[in-house]
Image (tube, rainbow, N blue to C red; front, side):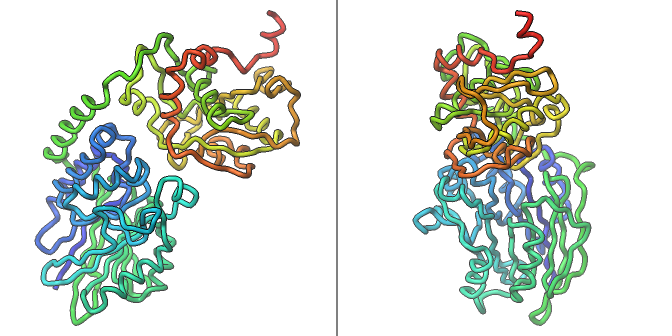
Length: 463
């Protein structure tokens, strides 16, 4: 009996590409085909998702004919309520065998595994979500050991299936170890680390494949099942760039965008003074974020990169504007860092090539790293190096551990590696866009945001 798998992973809301993916799915699928996604399909940088609580993604999966989706980290980033809402309202099963509520219960609508019937075969389908470590408890869920959880599902369904497929959002290297550790797995479809396999691998008798990222490729695995064994016949990862966009997906996107805009565009409050933004120049919007972070954590210093936002705020604030200018699902973060590392990071921010560098990093949805903006610090410099620093009016101490409010992006040293030399970090559960929403309506913080914190030495001397 033949079984074909068409699979995707890490679409990250690149829905124009997904419209092409869908055309290829329609072309290659038949009654022997199973259509699966490995997670991170729904990235909430998308206004279509933000404005529909993720239902736009569900509609697209259903339209394309998917039969299961594993929950990746991006399906979690908009909160547990959104995840449950999507899963409950989806005819496509949301699967994770190691994801639970903080009290140990399964989320509504989420399945630990399912058994599908295709071409006379019973197919056990399970998969795991990635461990987000400190964010697990913060966001209201727990992640159990993926290997133990997968083995538990296999044991629970013993003698009830012919083929075991694992949709795993853990990473390709880990999945190779998984194939070596658990003999009962027939096929692993990998995700999370965006690796593209040119063709499937076979490890310990287990077939593995991964389709890259962003809907740029579609994975196809052709197999044959005979007398209890599964044989790999052929595999490929097909580029989507030349495929036509599926009209039904385009229609779902258009109607979802219209619904989302209507829902999110309502003004929350007016902005009397425009908060402009720039990637390199010190600007009031990024200063406002730094001030807000410092206030939230009641600490000595606020520090944030201007690349966290894409534009300024004019006339009024709405949820739509906040999503557009600050799409990154990054969290307000506290950490402690020695002055010498902080100074090195600030000094590197004087280099425009650092500010204009690709800001790519976990959770980052901007383009450039951007210049560092501060609260509680005054920086005096000559254009290329720092000549002096003060912290809340006091002398700067290189060996002192300072208490800093920032983002988890900078905590990891993304864009500014010196900031990774930190300790005692903690997070708040909301996002940087919520800092903007909270403080841009406070006149005192808006006024203070226009006060410079960086001073060019020769300019200061001439005043």
